[in-house]
Length: 253
Ligand code: GLY
Image 1 (cartoon, rainbow, N blue to C red):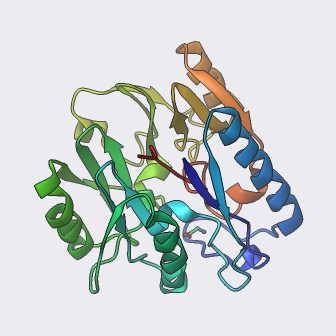
Image 2: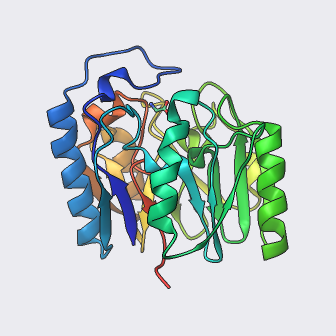
């Protein structure tokens, strides 16, 4: 199952932290997003696309609104105030599938800061995710058998800008942005140095959905024997986003 949301016509006013603002063609972003959704369908996902939120510029990035685990969905409290109104509709969409629990003030947590590896949740300590948010997450999920490991992140928006899963025990990483030692016994593929923001990949059932723009890193992934489904998300990348940000993927049960 993949929950997505149509691109907001206000995407040009999105939050930006480390990127310079460039004009975003909302129509082109919408077309690219539809191709992304088609790619998810091609990989076997049932895509539930939520309607556009014309006033919520970043609302296409549904990943930040929730952390969906097998047992429970944690509705977040996004670190950017402009994004807090995004969670209500995502929570409604998740309600049929999971018990819902919530991060409360003063905690903040963006789903983009949570990297799941089995029963471990690595959580980036960033401008979007604070210690109170991490502590609340731990309190909510540790009784359900998860371990929460805070991770320091440098020079990027979210933990998953720096590192994502591309295989059972393999992570794609920019080692300038995060210490690889934080991730136990994982193997790593490093992004090409000329593509520092290339660390975000979406692993679905053995295939990695990946931005076509990061050609050199894409080649490295393929050289490692990783199956890649390339998508053109160039307009969405201008909004300081990646391929994980645009969906919440989980098993329906
Ligand atoms: N534009 C993505 C974010 O800042 O949340």
